[in-house]
Length: 574
Image 1 (cartoon, rainbow, N blue to C red):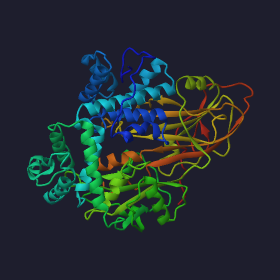
Image 2: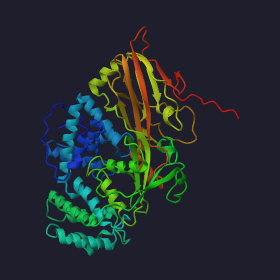
Image 3: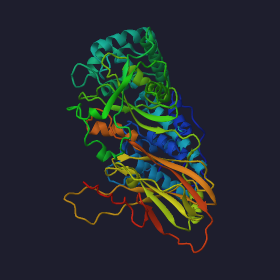
């Protein structure tokens, strides 16, 4: 088979059939069901998660070798650990000893491009590799089984009645009684007896955090003579019993305060700048003036998706139904006492953290606040466009024979931003509209996701992406700040006469959790973490006269210029 970093690609090697993945329908379905993501990107993200055994967001050398070795064994290949380690080293661009998703994705797509595979072939193959990897994880035992890890987190949250992020002896004993009655025929009661609590409390603080609970559970499971899928089924029964008990006599959370951004039109800032003025857990009131309390709402416990929660919040805030919003909440305390800030997620029932949030908000020690931001209009006539890939990409680039009209994200978005070009922007067939966006921020610490929406893709092409390494500043700096973050140019080639409307949404909202944890912030950042370039109306006319191929001009907010960046603002007279 074509493993992750195969050094000798073979395009049409036979692949084994799919394997049953008991308890893992949600994990496998991510690649096929993420309607708002490019199918190749979604499939690769799912494969990365399948390789990430400890769910840390990075692949260690040990994780990489474990999965690849077992995949080779499954298909009768001879696995050479030295060559596997070498392939990982090649992908590890920052020499950190681990792979983040961007490094994983880049190396993976490079291998597939060298093989000349089509988009469909890539998606099909990656999905098969996901199934193989998850099947091998299940065979590696409960510790590595994605479904068991997921269910254990649910059980921990359900055991944690107080919502403080730890299991007290009282919560442990109450859970023990319930589990003993319901599943004693399937699972050793010693899993949650008094001796097990003492053994699991490795730091001796008298309570169990999530990592201690997970580790003690894995130790117990590895000592029982049960199949991994049988353990999963039993744990799912435990969840069902605990949820039934939790919901007896209660139909909604206590009233939850809804906070919105104070400014009518909040600025957009990149991560490295967004947190600078925010309040921390040591000084939580520092920037609360940037948020305003808009009301309260009790959330029904029957809500199953993030959109269902958003619908209720929009109604309370009297926002139109066609508005997108981002919702954040502060979760139960982690080790050390800090409360993580989480983005509400979950497109489908059972996915994301919607159920977990409702469970948490129903507990006595929950922080009953939601933060709403990134309010923007949902497109009604424009459709998300995938990026051109492989042969299609090469064909479109060959048709880019004229001038390039560029908009860069910093000029358009940062701070107050600049005005868009007058509508319509008139260009010629063979010209290109180019929108430049960032790929990462703060020396690769935070990732951006860019989404393109168009009303059609026969006048202007679907986006063609090109990676751009920014030029290093010639000015000497007092201290090293690392390499500039790479940029991405999205080119829309003018194919024929007509009109087209498009916009690009640029987001790092899913990185706010990481930023707020790293900087110990008390709330989400008060500026926007999603911004929109556009909508831009482009009118394509027939090319006449001499074609100036490769000429690049940039919009500076006032006029087209051969220099990228905003026009200098005129100083106001005093």
